[in-house]
Image (cartoon, rainbow, N blue to C red):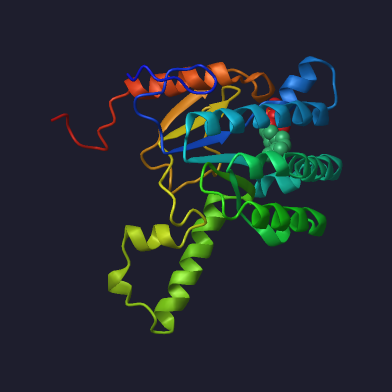
Length: 247
Ligand code: FPP
């Protein structure tokens, strides 16, 4: 391991993941344990988002994808959906300068058109003001569902085949990856889920094929940069064979 240290004093990690994906779960339980409204848990969760984004930037991780709102989450009570959308907008407004100054580029994956207009406008503004940044790519998965993403990809590829733009015999894994929301990005090396559930909940179904999965019982509002770094260290100890045998 290198003796260099990052800005937060941690040793530079030997083999960094190129892409970290996180299912941020447990905000509701965090609030319930304290007899608070669920929205308080999301507010506290937004603070964890800030800290983990900062840590990824300091460690020079190229891509971070956060599952902030799933296609299924639209079925939550309207008050909670509204509060989550307002929180997201507030987060983007408050973080815009920090993202700009720290070379972080914002990107959204998911059904962008389903988001409320004011949220879309804020996203468009922050996306364009960070578009030329080439440090950390922050992907927020919003109104995201892996099956929807795959369905949309099939529709696009099928339409191209039907119009003669594409020969079906040339469809391969690279072409499919190129038609997903994550086109041009490496697949996640690590998927972290907080709050202990052993599920992937319709998250990045294609892209997680070879990701190393880490489930921690910690609820998202309590998840710290220290625990995140300890997961990165465990990742470095894992033997990734991608279906092959050791040489
Ligand atoms: C899951 O916890 C979390 C969500 C559905 C929303 C995630 C949102 C945030 C972390 C805050 C806002 C996001 C950003 C990017 C600023 P849950 O409500 O399902 O928790 P539970 O399983 O304990 O009920």
